[in-house]
Structures are given as C-alpha cells and as structure tokens.
Image 1: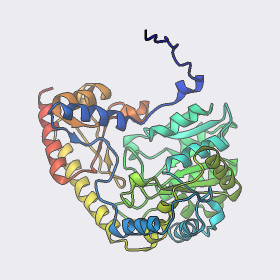
Image 2: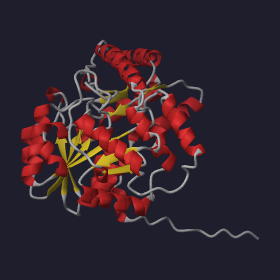
Image 3: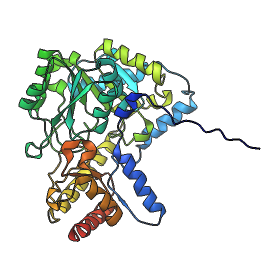
Image 4: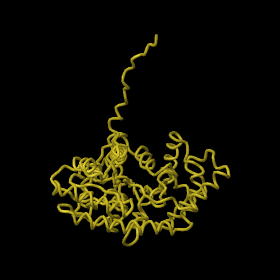
Length: 397
C-alpha cells in the first residue's frame, strides 16, 4: 500500500515578501502561452537585442573552451579581463582606473545586488529613479533598506529633478541610484544633472550607483558619465556596465562594476559566498570584444535608431497616444492616459485582444501609471505589424 505523506506549506523567510520580480519575463511567459494556442504575438516586451553576438566574440569563446578555460577563476575575475575593463573605462570615462577597482560578475544585476547588500543597513535610505528598473526597489527592500523614489516626469524629459533630489536626501541616505541612458524611458541625464549628483555625493559622503549598461546605445551626441563630469567623486561612485546590451550577449551573463578597491574586495567576497566566480571561458572574450572590431556595435546602434524613429512616429500617429523620442537604450514610454484605462489593464488587454506584448508603466514603479513600455528590440517588420495592431485595438476602445 502506497502511503503519501502530507507535507506542510513552505514557511518562507519574511524577507521574501519584499522581493519583487521583473515583469518582462512574466509577460513573455503569458505571450508564449498564447502562441502555444495558435495565436500570433508581436513581442515588444522583452529588453533584449535581437541580434547575434558578433562572430569574433563567439570564435574567441570557442578557442577559450578548446584551450581549457573551463575551471574556477578568481572571484573578482581573471586578471586579463579586469585589466581590459580598467583600460576601457579609463579611455571611455576619462578617469584613471586600475584593475583592483574592477569586479566581473555573471551579468550586471549582481553588481546592483552586491553593492546594495554591502552598503545598505536596515533602515538606510536609497534614492532611486521611478519609473525605473524594478530590481532597484526590489533589492533595497529585500535587504531592509528604505526605498525613496524620485519621480521622473515626462515634462522634464524623464530626468530627475535636482532640487527634488536635494529635498529627498536625509542623514539616513546611503546610496543614490542613477541610470543613463534609462530603462524604461530612454532618457539621458545632462552634464548639469550629473555634476549636481556628483557634488552632492562628495559633500554628503553618499554613494552613487551609476547604471550605465546602455552607454553604447545612444543616438545623439556622446555618452556622458558621472565620472566625466565629477572625476573627484570617483571613490563615491560604483559604475555598472557589461556586455549584454552593447554586444548582444544577454545569455552570456557578463557584467562588471568599477568602484573603490575596498568596496571591490567586499563585492568579490560576496561573490565568493554566492557563486564563486564568473565563468572563466566567457571572461576570455572581454578583451577582444572591448578592443576588437566595433563595426557590429555601430551597426546595431544604427538599426536601433531607425526602429526608434519608426515606432515613435507610429505611436504618435495613433489617436490619444503621445510618445517622446528617447535619446538612448531601446525603449519607448508612450503616454496613454487619454485612453482612460489603467496601465496594467491596458497592457493585459493589448496582449489578449490585440496580440501585442507590452509592459505596463507600473511595472517600473507607481509613477509609471498612465504609460506603457515598448521595446523596439525587434525587426522593423514586426514593429510595423505591432503598430498596426495597436492602432486597430485603440480604435475599438
């Protein structure tokens, strides 16, 4: 006789209730379910370049694997890769960087997680952009910090307001997070914005996590980093970047942080305790990627710019929708308040009734109400099809 024992429900640690998620993957799963039922869906939800990783990078990875780069490496990263990143940051941000400031992680998200875990005590305040990448607020809450959102307003081109930032800073402020170019709005902080944040960090001894993962996907002018504008604030800045967006390498999981050497050692220790190290063979591609042929990067950026213009013009031609033209990344954040439907309900209906997968603006924080986010990391053909479906859906509301 088979006896099955009834097991009690799992009793999670209380901190798990503070851990959020990334809605893009939830919507992707819903879209895949519809496709399994025979529906066609235009995917404008996921923030992933639809290009192949450049061939010379793939070839280098194959050589590394065949050459035996299949074992553990140092927790901060292998020296040749860290040296390449230090040189790259020195050349692109205009500040001297040594490899002891560099930590390589499996993707850029661990830099967010480890930085907040290393710096933020229970009750410490962290100012972060809202709407903004949802993992910021999630991790702040998870470690017991107090998330303090700074509202990004459309009338200010979705940039933070410096005066409002000054008002939000208290004696408990430990960290300020900035993201430029920004997800989900595509906005870019000005040199004046960056100088104000950098000076504030130095005056109040506050750390700044500068998320610059989209630094190579910018359409007008050149990328400006907080390190360009306030190099003296370098010891207060944690620079986050990586390979995923620039080189179409999301699945490779390669990111890095550049920070004060003492903090870098602490972040490396957290990595030792969590995942030991980043895959050795994948790190071997970092030098040839950063200093090898850059034509694929420029070709991808040029194609994104074409797509940006098509989706912005298309959205602005649809009744009751308005959309600003983003300056970077590969997202648009149209205003849909005149449709008179809550953003989450609208996104759900657009998927179910219109066959277009998008994200509610509230997936990026409460100040995202009244907006949707579309990723134009898809072909022009699919973007145009998506626009047709959006227009048809809106016409029936």
